[in-house]
Length: 436
Image 1 (cartoon, helix red, strand yellow):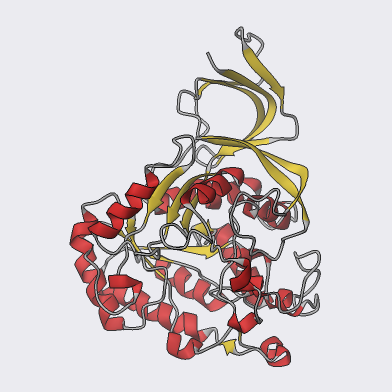
Image 2: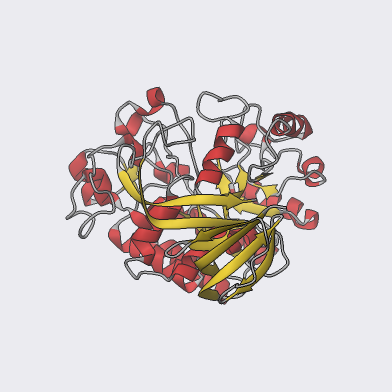
């Protein structure tokens, strides 16, 4: 019989709001005992001293990108899941922008065929169905057919520029009782911008995207939710004004949830310039490189005031979840000028340690608050029952060492891609074990 006894481990469980040090016995992947001091140890038990380590529910990523099928040179489903497990994620939901996209039953069947080859020991994989045909934002996908399939909900992962189409989508989906996730971005206002519009973009000579590109689109979505009542998840919140709009919408009882991508909590436009003065102080990047294409993101990194507002919104619960939005790209795709590079960066393998040191150890949010927005709250947003550290339940857990040092390089990364501003850097914090 497989038994493990973790002694003196710090247990974090947002569901029961527990943050304490105890012993925990795991038998055949079930939580068999949680006590201050377990003295009666069954035979053939592997005993581990876990002082200084953290045990919590597995993390949930509400949306990320897979290369497979269609772009396997960026990422395969196997490498994506290996990266997720290495970073402590036991549940991952992927967006439908594969090739072919998941916009009808044929596209879904092909994706499921690829999924069958995955090991059952890897994290649970969920998938979004496309809102529009070909993920092009022009006409509705085959929503009725997809609604009867295992898709977790509908999301293109791209912005929809036609408010009339958004309205029709919300009206059509309402009786289907499926989650809808929308990214608010007015492409007309965004133009060919590559970073947040402001003094830094002018000085760097990079085309800027005004904050209003997000907030105007968000205001439209919230008005449509108010008039129609269809629940909506707001993706990739990145501005202080968006936080105000979502706070007001929730206060009015609108059925909305929201998420922020993890890098927007750690960085701002100062990282792009490589100037700590632009970031309002010492940047989270220990060796910031000006014009690093791996900092070209969608939405773009905001100003310091945006970053602080997002952190406070996470703490207050205005923003429900942190998403990783893992976006793999090849070396060739990213080794171009900043504005010419495809937006996005990977993050499944090091989001937890960087967020831990950037937010928890600095006192910006508590350990339980971070675990809530990375684990239980994203699961609830997806309509799933969250994992918990409770006696008698299956062990969907991770063991995290916040001090273990490791280097982000080709030898340590499980992902096929390496498009991250932390590549080559030494980080503190590593997931030691994942139970799924």
